[in-house]
Length: 359
Ligand SMILES: Cc1ncc(COP(=O)(O)O)c(C=O)c1O
Image 1 (cartoon, rainbow, N blue to C red):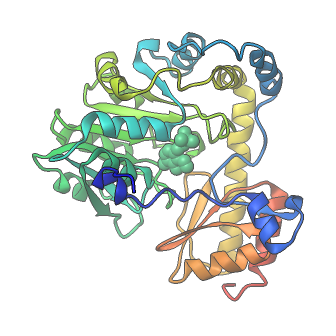
Image 2 (tube, rainbow, N blue to C red):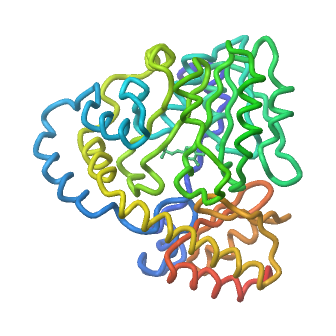
Image 3 (spheres, rainbow, N blue to C red):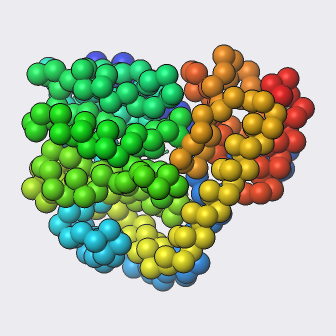
């Protein structure tokens, strides 16, 4: 038997949401009959223009990608009103999170993160050899910033804040988050994961990007996998001060963002009208999902993301029943997470829900 590091041996591998093909084969339906509301993906395909740009870029597949990601960095910088030096790209923001953990973690250190939250914080912490300190959410299913702060000690090198939080869809108020950043010692890296930022409709909520470009111990992570509908291409990034990013990116392998991913993301950023349309579509879909649940007196946590969390005692059973009817949701230890789909997908979701004992 090969010998792996004990930290690696102890990892329970990441379990991805089930694919439509796998579920279709299991329950004997056509793949087109399956509704996937499991992975918080965009329900529509890539932005117009992306397929053509990707096809053109594919002709250069014999060349390594631009490791400095110049074209995409310039567009992303202007999208946020920051400098390209404030950006560090990776093959999805989960890669960024993993590389951050490898850069700042290691035996004898600890990492603080909310729980439940995005599982990669915990996996990456283990991989690095650091000790994970999970911190329960507050009674409103929000990240508990005070408890997060209390969990930090002299061994802590990184704290993760997921805002909006996955799987609960809750946000922390801007002023509370700023106060939290003020309170964290400047030798502790704060990673603010804003994978779902584009879906937030709360007018008082603000991104922490302005803080990240002015505080050496803060980075914000973002992704093209969600509203930009490029989950399969794997491209995400961190925003921070250039010197901070330069240290962190030493943990990254070269050429991890492929040329087609760079081109697809760049093409998407040049279509702000489509971005707005999708933002509005998600807000309407989320309203429909939440009001449908309320009409049926099913408890849910009001969401600022592209999914809604239904706290329940037996999410595994409900997940299995939905799946039996061709609807894939996501079961977590304390509840069921349902992504916002198209109108048709939401109708299928409610049609199945009305057949289940949950309703
Ligand atoms: C909170 C959060 N962060 C990051 C990601 C990762 O996105 P990606 O690696 O596709 O960029 C996800 C994906 O579901 C997420 O929920």
